Length: 117
Image 1 (cartoon, helix red, strand yellow):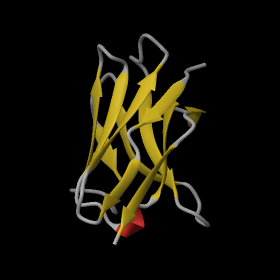
Image 2: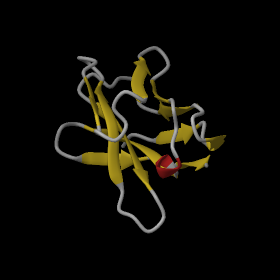
Image 3: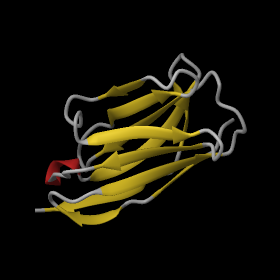
Image 4: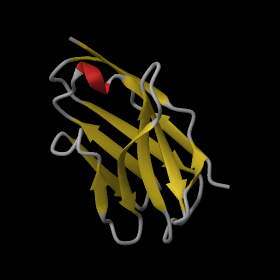
C-alpha cells in the first residue's frame, strides 16, 4: 500500500498563496492517479484536483479552477498543489490520495490550510 505524507499547510490572508506537497513512498506511479481533496469543518470531503501520473492530465473542481495548479515531480515521487488567490472558503484540511483507477485507496494524514479574511 502506498504511504502518502502531506506538508505545506498553514495560515494565510485572503488573496495569498500556499503550496502543498504530497510525498509518496512508492517508487513508481505509472498507472496511478494522485488527487487532492479537502474537508472543511462540518462539511463532507470534496474533490479539489487530480493528476494522472503517466499522462500528466489534470482535472480541477470548478471552485478552484484558475486559482489552483496541480503538478508532479517524477524523480521525487511528489505531487504539488499550488494555491493562489486563496479565499476564506478554501479553509480546510487538505488530503492527498492515490488511485489505480477504481477509487482512491490510500490517503495521507492531511494538512491544515486556514485563510483569514
